[in-house]
Length: 239
Image 1: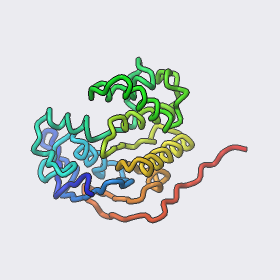
Image 2: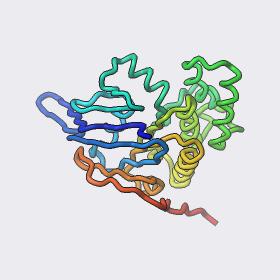
Image 3: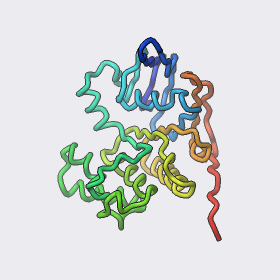
Image 4: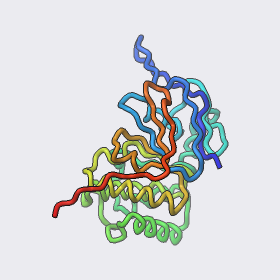
């Protein structure tokens, strides 16, 4: 089942008289349950493509479909509804609310979706357990490590049971061990829940977890390959 598709998408940005072609005619189909990495150097178009898939931006031309719906035809409120109900986000800088606990950060999307209190508590606790933070539920972000904060962000992204989770450089601000753990957790949750994950990275330690790797360069897809047996690099630990 197809969860997302972009068709001949372009995205141009203009600053004064200078036009930047971030995407130059990209087409891509993403199936339900995939664990897909967008890779390529800085400026290749990875983040722009994620923003289009996340209904955070509109293409200059072309179409973007999420769950079969052409989101390029939606207005701002309709795109917000699509994001809230269908798409989860994991950001490079975690984007947690600093005054809220881990529990409250994960609960927030459920409050916005009008879930009842008992359902919220059960789901939030289960999600925190799934990212190995059940005992840290009542800690604020400033009381947690970067790896723990990113795991809270993963739990928050899954709170509303989205069809698609998008992650932009999810390990860029983490050391090797924490980055490896975050990717292991995302991979396990993908397999356990069937939620589609699409993440952008230029780090081979990260994209080696992927089961499909789409490479962009200069706003174009230059390679799209399946990986039968992902082989993440082992993490060295001190004796």
